Amino acid sequence: MPVYGVVSETAHGHVITTILVAMVAMLFTAVSYGRMARAYPSAGSAYTYVGRELHPALGYVTGWSMAMDYMLNPLICTIWCSKAAGNFAPTVPYWAWCVFFAALFSALNLRGVRTSARINEVLAGAMLLVVGVFLWAVLRYLHGLPPQGPGFLTRPFYDPATFSAKALFAGTSIAALTYIGFDGISTLSEEVENPRRNIMLATVLTCLITGVLASVEVYAAQLVWPSSLKFPDVDTAYVYVAGRAGGPWLFSLVNATLLVATIGSGMASQLGAARLLYGMGRDNALPKRFFGAISARHGIPANNVLFVGGISLAGAFAMSYEMGAEMLNFGAFIAFMGVNAAAFVRYYLRAEEKRWTRAVSPALGFAICLFIWLNLGWQAKLAGAAWMLFGIVYGAWKTRGFRADLVRFETPPDLG
Image 1 (cartoon, one colour):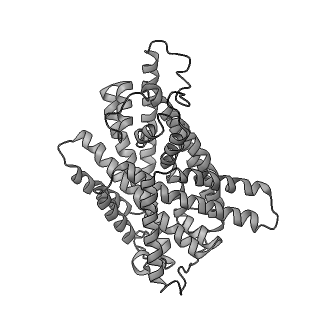
Image 2 (cartoon, rainbow, N blue to C red; image 1 turned 180 degrees about the horizontal axis):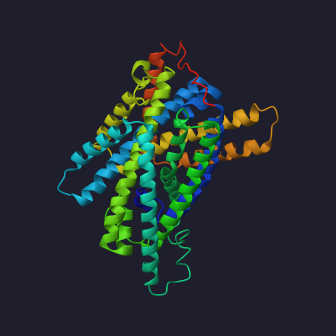
């Protein structure tokens, strides 16, 4: 819901189509993540999979791109929460809300993984109820409309008056943000029970359920708010859709729920970022003394939690939600392509028995992710390229011109 307005404007109203196209790519990639988690149940996620399966230098590049991706996720959550909170208390300045939410995410994550998990379970249940209320209001709203034309129910999928393939795939490159959380699951492989089984299940099911629910939500929104109408505020567009469907009470309810939902997303993404930085620090890709440290009390990388919180706060003052989302996806899709490539190499090229069924999923996942990545906006590509260049320069400095090992992977304890 938070990214709805940005995607609608970019894709000329074809939001549900972008969600479905992105889901295809993400499902293939989710399978690759799950397979690689079975082989490497380690905190580093894509960084570890690519580095161990392909080459340590490629793992470093993947980890560096993911570092941007993971740190931007809590950043844009901080931006959105601050804007949504401003709808309730407009007299409180934006910067004050940014400070509050960046501090809130950090404080909750510093209490440990189990606290974060319990909070997100409660949030998920409450949000599901609000989705049901919203859909009920949409049905009432549609029932009260005069008879519509024959294309009313199919126009959200394809509107010949506004359709553009270029705009659709540009929107898809942003809509993929809907699914970004699924890859963060693999960063918790060292905390979960039976990771070789449960990481695969959690990753694929999270991606699938997210896609189904998101499709229903955006389809309903498109029926209520035609693409020909402009949103008062693009970043909080879905809140205005809810107000049109159910009135001021639903506007406030959805605004509050999205605020809570984004708090949950911000917490989870900040923890995922901290775990990624820990994996890179432990393997000496980043300064180990700081990034590779673990809190003895709560078992989390507390330094990294605070570091990501500081980045989120600074970034919230420097960029828009839309720009942050596009930059995030630049790094995310590099990681997705890397994981698909690693799965292809491990389960097909290096397999004793080469089954074509093991090659299809990662190959298609790589190809679709590459195509979507190429359709990102030029600003995001430019900023992402600058970040990657900085990472390469840092790597050259760290290894004295690449004359030493860039990464030294350490083996985590046996996780069963």
